Image (cartoon, rainbow, N blue to C red):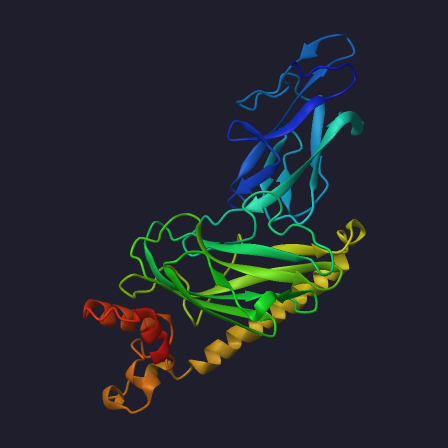
Length: 355
């Protein structure tokens, strides 16, 4: 059916990759979509598509464009090209205005969700892949969100992640995460505002642009809008070598996985003061966690002395990477040693017992 009606826009939609969508998804600052619509002008002339597939405008200078949410998307006021900048926790309104008065027009507003994908090696995404990452909830409701990683095309052998949240707004049901796959042996725990998750991958071909790692079930505790974010402490390949830039001393912050959650009725969804306070709290907790990790490893270069190989202290004997703590590299190396010596009995349990 033609998108035509006098004095009214019809079929206003965001198109991405040649198709209409209600979610703008992809990389931060790189994913974009085009607003498209049809109109009949007052002189009776009809345009089924004011902007075509190539972005050509049939009546340039007639319309301008704006977004109702600052920082989530940016929009070119002349072309109607919308660029993704952040995740959304509520609908983002995109509006077509009539020039030069910038007045609204009937049918000139459409709502979308914004959802970042993990596009760089080691980035972690949280929540739904499309729509809002964390769907709004009421007090007492639960929401299960998935953690996914971009492995950069390389098979991973393990990961060490920290997820930070405001425990006055959300709690982790059961205090642990659940592995998404049978080939991930996961150890997780919650302490205060942080869920720590270390995963040992027992297969040798876990790779992809958005690989499911584990799930977390949150219970919504009190009204307001709150932040969830995280750090990648380290990732290793199947040999046990580090992948990417994430290191325990310099964690990699989530990009796609920095999301917000709204708890309560719709009137709380625009509680910007609540979100600002939550962001400050979560960032403080993440900073404190990073500083604590760095402090524990300040003497790392001195943890492989000449007597360490025969030390009775377990952490020194198995501290493969000399960082003064049994971590992901050590776990993977021990796992490979046991596996390659053909002792597969209780292999995963034996590794965690040693650690």
